Image 1 (tube, rainbow, N blue to C red):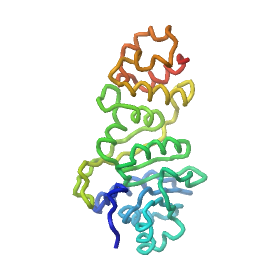
Image 2: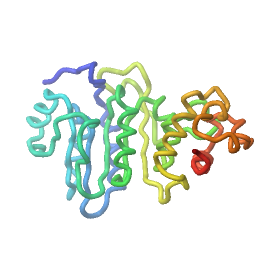
Image 3: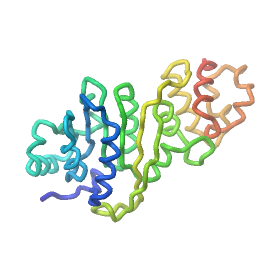
Image 4: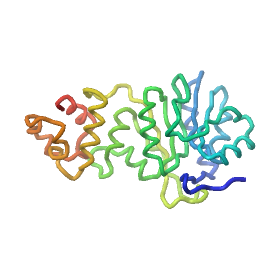
Length: 253
């Protein structure tokens, strides 16, 4: 039938209840008309077989593994012409209009996938994804949380994050050595009030690059001496809100 490739981070969902739960939640968010849906890493089709039953959608799937592509096409001929062969990290935006993303994402590239969602943020209606639990927790974490970091701030700056539910290891084949969780991203109505996106990204990444230091020492190269006298720079990066980071961009060099 097919083989599992550890090098591609393949852990296939085999629990039908979880598959249906993900797809049911997704369907509630799809537009009534002109819905476009991209599945990332369909693998053996645990989600795909339910997704292709949704009426009236423009469906595509991106899959890197040629063996899985062959299996999918043989098992569900309706997928002919709907599979993009390649990595989610390398493909261009799959639709002209706004679209939805869903997937049991390969855990070895999960952070890169989230940054890809940031690249597509102006075109995403929603994203529902299965991640390693630790990654899902980082994405959803707020200020003061020990796992609050770069990915937390950057994703939450543009998306509302919903931590939906956790999934046991035995729901997969083979069972991963880590727990999993499903999260949802929904676009925020307004962007943070930063000076510009480039400054915001630079400040956040620089601040967390030395997260144990005070903000003053971590981001010193980005500011003139006067602004650094502000007491906010006595804090550490994980103590700042998204609004704090956005506000500081206006005081950068």
